[in-house]
Length: 472
Image (cartoon, rainbow, N blue to C red; front, side, top):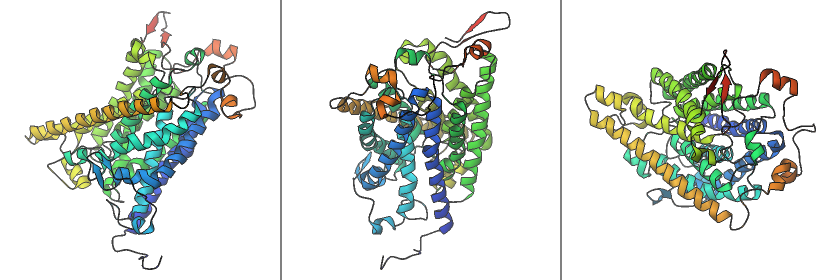
């Protein structure tokens, strides 16, 4: 430690402290947030496996992150979309000023590492209930290395080609959510479906536990979006407020649609609406005004609802792929929606506050108002190019990774093991009680079953006159 300054001139202790706290908020979204959300949302026989996939991913990503993946994502340029692999463990490097913000590389590595980890855990949501755990152990480091680092470098690194082009992705609508949604759906295609009986009936084993995880996810987003200005300034305050305003609006919109069309508010539906709101505001959190955040909440609570509850059920192609937690709708579609709406609503002064450039980042509505429509259309075009790039990278890389892994181990558990679940995969069970989360006969017949037991199941209900409202 000799020769290393304890308080380098660049260091802002307040910013550094907030960045560490924000990173820990994001870490808590995964451990224990998504661990208990997944553990409670799946059928009882898959509770341990689902939770363990999340825990394993978090640990594996973090180890790979500090050894090679961070500098692939944010290091010196090797290609326009990829950095040079190198260790991020030497104290001389760790104590240098980060590429942005007034704090050291060590803080930035931690902050970006928990973002990378949650991306893999979100992918896991698409393949719960059947993926071979050994295949998952291989998938995590391979996808981190050959997919996540491509998009992170291209969109977030100062040297990335989309960064230089002028894409707006405030906190990961593209890098994290669109990536995880597309990769998860692609992986689900290659892994194959759950057992037919699990697809037809997959009731949560513990809704209250799921809600606890959802609560950690929502509150943790304070650090998710509030940490991305890399300072404890006014932009962080705006990002946090916009995040919660959009999310609340999205949740209420989703519940209202459930009530209108199904005559029954659903807790699982509310959680879906919460997630789509969080995802949609992420690329825009600190660069849009409050009215835009509320508008985005209405859109994120309605458009993914429509794609999930109507389009998905009418599409044989979409139903062919068994996306357990519907990450295509809650992350890929909501993330794309957020990116496009950012291109409409991005406010020039707020972008100048975040990016330091006024005329480069202008939403279409403001471009039209300023009589500089070309700038606004350019921003929309860049946002669309970013969506296409992320989709292409993730479909190709995820497919190649899955094809490579299955040369060595099966991607999907055997039919016999899937009948058993946790006991077959890990020799452990979540609860020492009977049943698989099935409802008591009297309760089921009196109140009916949940509308969200599985995305693929036809959602129908009866109105007061006894006729059916068909959502297919």
